[in-house]
Amino acid sequence: MSMTVEKLGTRRATVRVLHTWHEVYASTLTQSDPRKLIGCVEDAIRAFERRYSEWGTHPGTPTELATIQKCISALHRLMKKHMADTGQSIKQRQGRAQRRRSAH
Image 1 (cartoon, rainbow, N blue to C red):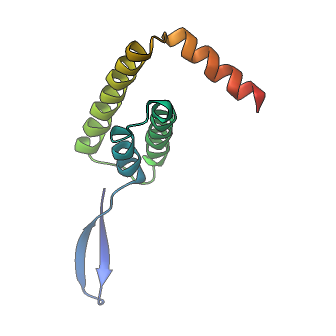
Image 2: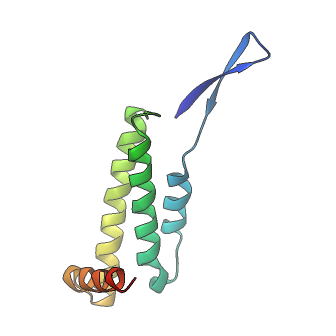
C-alpha cells in the first residue's frame, strides 16, 4: 500500500506501508516445528482476512491482491504436504478444529 504524506508543509513523499500479513506469512513459512505449523497457517489466514476487511478504506494494488492470492495458494500446498507427512486428512483436521472452537 502506498500513502502520500504531507512533509514540511509543501513537500510530499510517497511512503510504502507494509501490512502485518507480510510478517505473519513469512513467519509461517519459516516455522520448523510441525506441531506449531497449523496454528501459524491459521494466523496467516486471519491476517489475510483482516487485510481484506481493510480493503474498502485502504485499497491495495492489483499487485498486492495477486501476491495475497499466491500466498494463499502456497499455504494450501504447505498444509497438504504437512497433512500428507503426518497422515492427517482434511476431515480429521476440521473435526479437531471444530471441537477446539466449541470447547471455548
